Image 1 (cartoon, rainbow, N blue to C red):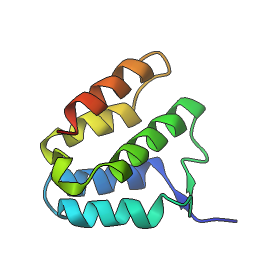
Image 2: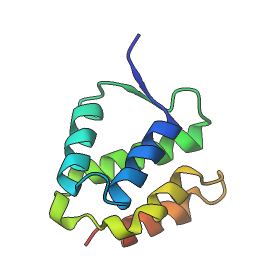
Image 3: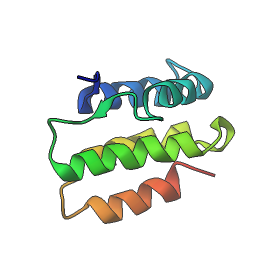
Length: 101
């Protein structure tokens, strides 16, 4: 069985990045090490819409260089993780519009 990234773990690493406890580079390295190629199960015990949100966040952060990520918008990423099924699409759009330059 693979290790997991839980919803709470992802929220904590995003908060650490957004509050500058870790650098954008450290955050990007964490995402790269833990997300692709799918080294860990993502949100396995969460509802499907939460898993989708977690994958969208990790995929987004994996595809953008650290210089293009906007840490001041970290709360938007957390909002996406905490989305209801009905708000998932609009919060995902907001995430991509706010968290990357």
